[in-house]
Length: 59
Image 1 (tube, rainbow, N blue to C red):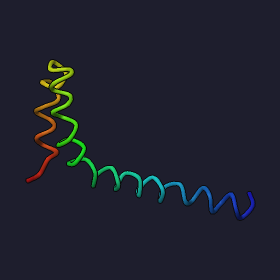
Image 2 (image 1 turned 45 degrees about the vertical axis):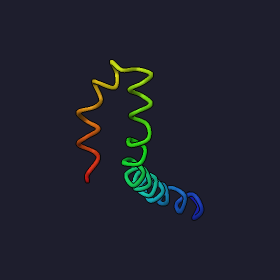
Image 3 (image 1 turned 60 degrees about the horizontal axis):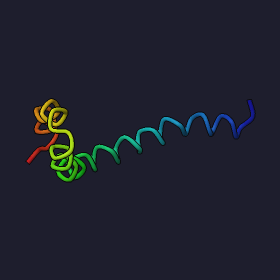
Image 4 (image 1 turned 120 degrees about the vertical axis):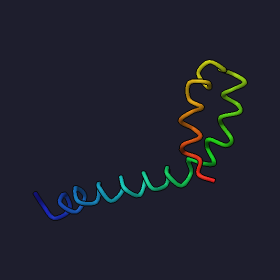
């Protein structure tokens, strides 16, 4: 493999970690905004997810 391929392959885990970190930071905001909409549109599914949503939101 040439040098560019090696750099590309080694950068993939770093990009994945940064992407996951961005999702972790945005999860609380996403749940606070999205859960009420989900409860209105799909109340049965929201009832299944509600116990898990409160564990994610740390206030």
